[in-house]
Length: 593
Image (cartoon, rainbow, N blue to C red; front, side, top):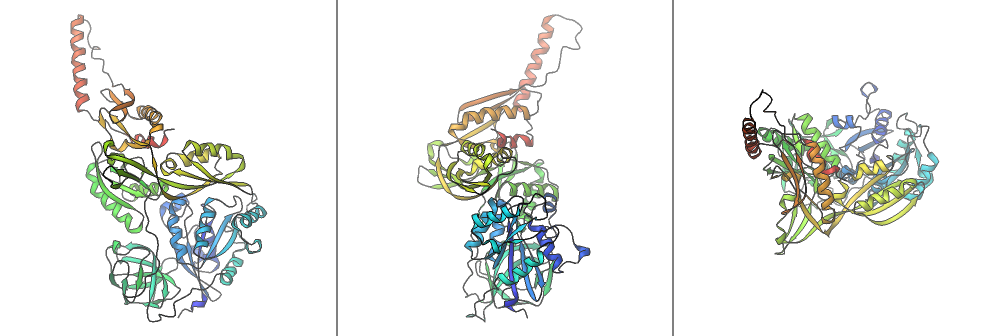
């Protein structure tokens, strides 16, 4: 039986690319959890896309033993799109290793994760990583941690996740500083566990990843999901090492998994409480995950719509943040409107759909969710321009607003401030943090997904970092900008834009589409309009066959007759012809300056 006082549950949190997964490799190696023969870089990043991109997407738990202690580590992502994974990991822990790259110092996500860990009351161990690199500024990074995060200089450890230097001292600090789990001794007869993640196994069914809070959970126990009222039984129970390893039971304070007899993963929600008694008090759980960015996916071949539906359903089994509903576009046919947590999340899902399920997709440009107040007093939510009611029925359109935190080297502050102003940002605060300047802005979320990140990296030569959170909705003067191709409105290209930017956006978008859409046998008109008012137009000239080439002579009337016949054919083709839109046409919305 595991003794609670010898258990240490902790997570590794850091900004993206600060070395979390590499440090986890050294912890696994030094504790002997993984044999050296089976060791590989970024071992806990098991998904092929994680390994190819060099990023962590999903949290990954693993159990280690060290000097008589059981150490439950949860490796977390660093990108802002997957911060919900970090929050779920921290809720299952008592401590956190806050990792800071010695070559970059404190960054935007460093501060965001630190604040979340502090809010949950976790013990934080500050660690400076990559001390083996020649460009490392160890003294400067320690000073930043002390000044920005208000942590004691003497508490900061120095490690190299690559060489293993300082990692044994870190393991000792985990056992000494991180407190053991606390349990509710007033209810010793009740077992409760927090579900912090789940996945679907095609052979076993729904697998719940849990942190046991009270009591013991044994094989064949009957458990109740307090949130959904579902009853289930334990088919298998075990720990992560890092693969699943069955055991007889899980005790209070332990992290592991429970194989349920559920076949539908929607019956198990992340944040729910598994309990041995239906009348016990539920655990606090998590805030529900709400998508903030929406994209439409259409198969290039309409008969693959069922394959796309099945693929999205399978991805949702392992990604609780994914939402999708069917939709229809007159120009593109049947498809799905999919909700994501950010552009990287959307990019990863599209890549998985195309590579794992061999689908060929057209992805419409991303948009955000708007609140629309109608004249009858009702409030509706829309995520695509085609759903916007008639202007006569509108009272107000509200767009999502974010609080944006930027960390920028002082030399680039001027251009970054100008960039934020160009994207309708309002400065809230500006603070100097050693070598960096911390800028805080409020900004419409729609501006963030329109090339803001790429422009930020370009202006700062890659040194600026950002973090953001949704803070609410604000009224704005917005209109629907429609794109017409050969007289047909293409819903997937329509967007909701600020009225003050509509003229410039229309002209730039029409010009860009003219260069992207291939020529046809007939002339194609591209128009941008608000309601019945055309703001911009461009024409793509059709191919013209020289019908007079085979004429060796003859009078002008014969030539006119052939040219007139060709003209009639072009007109008929223009009425019934179809224009093929390339993927770049939909992405062009993002690239309009």
